[in-house]
Image (cartoon, rainbow, N blue to C red; front, side, top):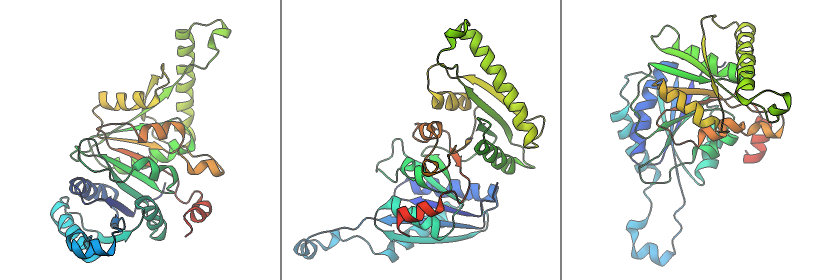
Length: 304
């Protein structure tokens, strides 16, 4: 686990910004972050010269006026009172590319992005960022007011699950926050060739999952009272099961590992994480990545 000292908040000059800033003010307090970057990326407004002269009001506001506007929103929406350095950055170009570059330039530990459901504006697409970013990601739904009484960690007992559990334990340490794990398991294709029924093999797989959890706790020296629930994925919809469990538990945050792999494929999310990122949910989601993975390839990709 690494300490999340630098946060980056992606703003798009819509109503979503206020919620993200409020949420980040509390998140930074829980994580004891040292610096928060607020970044807005403006797309170039290309207009014919005669049209610019005829309609000067169509010109996009300059960087200074945008920064001043964001500064006002930050000052009014930073409600936790937590004192850390705040930096506003205005860039031009493709939002996803610019944000990914800035994440690397400033060695950002976690990005905070919004998930729009009803608000207008396309905003910045979290799943595009999540696929290639070498840092962790926090996705906040538009209608969520910050509270943190219960955290659910989705765990498959891999090394990436270890990172997710460690991050959750760091957040909940010395705080009255309930923490539990959920493991979504499946019955393998071809189970009927064993002579067992589906339900019988589901029981077998649950038993294996419980043993894997015990080994996971032991080898990582996690507390013995760490709680894990086991949910059968009977329709190949792991995201449904994860968010369904978290919703039933009234969870305020879901944390999971990226489940990256070695080589080129490791810059992508694991299949479950990718489905969870695009899931339309009211629960904030934290995707924890091992910082620095695939930096060489990412720099080449972004031509840094």
